[in-house]
Image (cartoon, rainbow, N blue to C red; front, side):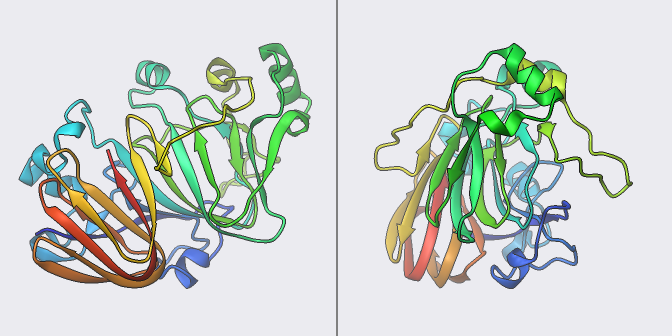
Length: 306
């Protein structure tokens, strides 16, 4: 089965909206619909295969059955599937948060840390997000500003536009703010330390938990560094992401699988003698060793490999 089409696990976090359903065709009974985990082997939200002999099985089930060779040689250093990809609809502000490094997360959380990148799929006029600090501060000032609710005064409030990209190494304080839809490609991790949450309460009526001690331990209190990924949209040891407009060719060679996420338009994907119609919101997994991939149509696609 050269092309696996995936159904996401969805999340109904309180800041979500309805655009993943109305604009991306994500099927879910959740309201609000905040996130769709469109490529995931994480137990908190696995993706499910919808076509072929593995229909109804999770992507993790498929990998276990077929062997880790379907992931490619570049995945061999990783004990687990290395990537998690989400579509996120922020109707409201997400909490100001930070993710730990691998070293800290493996010691304290028994899973990997989280480096991630954001591609702005769409946004309302005037939308912005928080991306690190606007100048270097001390850990002591960071702690004080958390306590007296002045943290946002020293954060880098970055205006956003459709097509913008933000690379967020572990330890970078950040928050997606209202009116933004993003595609997030990240390490396979679900560890988040909330620092500030606007005084909101959860479904149980209680204030949502904060993780101040952990955040103080892992946060880099310097402004974010400019990144240069050459021809790629983003790149680190966990993932390489490319953006394509319209027709393009890829290759699922022996080194890595290829994940395709259609973020706009419609078209077709051909690989291993099979052609599949795709549209905005569709997520595909193409195993390593499949060979040539041809994508055609009026569509915008994020292609991810290790």
